[in-house]
Image (cartoon, rainbow, N blue to C red; front, side, top):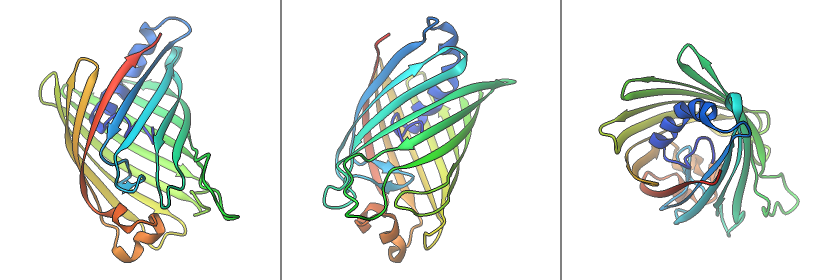
Length: 247
């Protein structure tokens, strides 16, 4: 999932964030299980390609329980260089709180790279705590995200992240949305900004997202974030998602 998702697209993620508490109230006492399968032209995490700028299959399975609790897992192909690691398998869980009509989502998130070959070096997997505030004003949904990691991937030190997202429903099937975020990692040569803007079209259980993604990482600093320096170049990516419910 990498956070709500870039896994669903940002626009779909914002609608899902607001809808979760209602779904939990309507679901059976034991909760419900849903998920999605997706393919996208490039898996971008906070503006940086995680799969060598290649087509990426993804999938997620989520449990939505009573009182706003939820948990899930997310899987995608990755390639940081030399097809190492070959895939990412994340685990997350949290709870939604309703604060006078504003949704607060508190989430524990573990980024896991089971087949990463460290060659005796630091591990790639790491943990992050996230908090997301979302509020809807009719067709407009605004969201603020904050995240902290006590030890970033590959022992990069403390990691802090903040972002803002706006999503606007143009019709009942078309949404425009955008995000601006800033990533800090203790041992990085410099913090960086990233941004995206795009459209999401929904038809039954399918969604299609087309999005421009960019960042301000300098070429000299790109090697810290990813071995493939093309991973930090601006791009337009396409995501096709199929959503399903099991229980």
